[in-house]
Amino acid sequence: MGTQLRVTQVDPRDRDALRAWYVPSRAAFLEAAPTEEDLRERGRELADHRLSAVHDTVAGEDRVVATLRTFDSELTVPGSGPVSVDAVSTATVLPTHRRRGLLTRLLTADLDRARHAGHAFAALVAAEAPIYGRFGFGAATRATSLVVDNSRVRFRPDAPAATGSLEFVPAGRTAELAAVHDRTRRHRPGGLLRDEVWWEAAGRRGEGRWLGPRGHVVLHRDEHGVADGYVAYDVTDDAVGRVPGGTAHVRDLAATGPAAYRSLWEFLTSIDLVRTTRAGNRPVDELLPHLLQDPRAVQTGPVDDLLWLRALDVPGALAARRYLGCGTLVLKVVDPLGLADATVRLHVAAQRCGADGWVCAEVTTTDAEPDVVLPVGELSSLLLGGTSAVALHAAGRLDCTASAAFALATLVVTPEQPWCPTWF
Ligand SMILES: CC(=O)SCCNC(=O)CCNC(=O)[C@H](O)C(C)(C)COP(=O)(O)OP(=O)(O)OC[C@H]1O[C@@H](n2cnc3c(N)ncnc32)[C@H](O)[C@@H]1OP(=O)(O)O
Image (tube, rainbow, N blue to C red; front, side):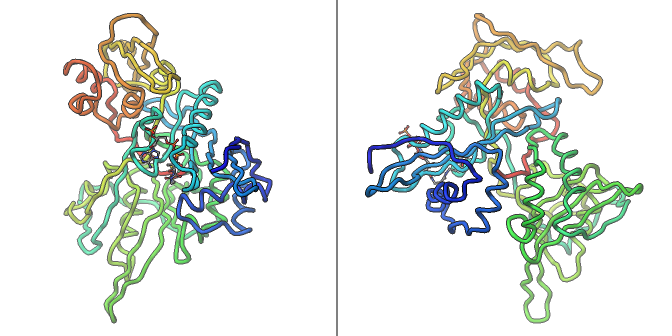
């Protein structure tokens, strides 16, 4: 390895610079090189993103050997809708340059920048679980896969009725899908903004990144004709002789209410020649099994982490969300990067309950003795309600009494599991 390492910011609209920037990611992510068409598309998609590159001089030539991409987004936190987040992606290092601190150099610089820019959180989807704890991230949402045996699907008589209507829409007609997604992502903690550029790209590449050549998009409308759900799915056909063996692969399914949700699943599980419905990246508390006479028609698993969160401003992160429990705890948060160390008093008063049950917290910095001492990654994994403080305590990751862990668990609990349906 050469010694003349330098960091630059790459303009995604500069085609040559973008081509060079994708060299490490091709090797690191085991991907094919982007075509000229891919580069043209990505230049448009990434126009507002921050692309960092580490350059080295190799055999007398300047080469990009490491990359990081970040962009401003919005994340839904419990009880209070979306807050700004620094979304981190495309952390790649050329295999000849790995384990020499290049990721550390790019990521710590970006987290510092994001904190000064006023983000209370950074978020990412981790390629491997051991990478990001050292940078103060904690797994905050989980996701699972479903395999449905369509022949066993019978809806319970008390399940919400399938009202409204369904229609096939071209994959490129995304305006109504975007509106449905936007309503759903604001409702559940872990939801991430999909902006216009995301939907334009999904639409353009309907037969590509989002959906394969056998893909379809089906929209659900309520009785007033308003779009309130959709499913995007691919199909594969494993017929044996004349015995049908089709599988529908759900790529994306969103519904703003139970009628649309039931209609979409009823549709999916009753397509002629399709025997199995598979869905990846679904919430761990998926509604479907509860609607069925035989819940085991739906096989669930495995469960994996998806969104990793990192508080950059501890008082800001705790105050951004709302709470269902009440009580007072002093938390001492320790940050391995020294960005967000803080001791705070988290006070949630019962009398401040809003009509919907969610309560704003008073968060103040303090010198008081802490009830709980915890690393920032552990705090971050608790903030969306998807991790149990009792389990973290039992695992030795919170320094506190069992009763303080229980109090923290009941403060941060959420009625729904957080879920992030959007990869980035
Ligand atoms: C948000 C995203 O983009 S997720 C995608 C992450 N990228 C990939 O998985 C692609 C393939 N891997 C790579 O490109 C690289 O190996 C990276 C980006 C994961 C790591 O880059 P490196 O420059 O090697 O990391 P760096 O040298 O800064 O390592 C910092 C520390 O993390 C550890 N580390 C880095 N990667 C891993 C890993 N995959 N598993 C376990 N530990 C790791 C290092 O050992 C080092 O530990 P130390 O401080 O105790 O010595």
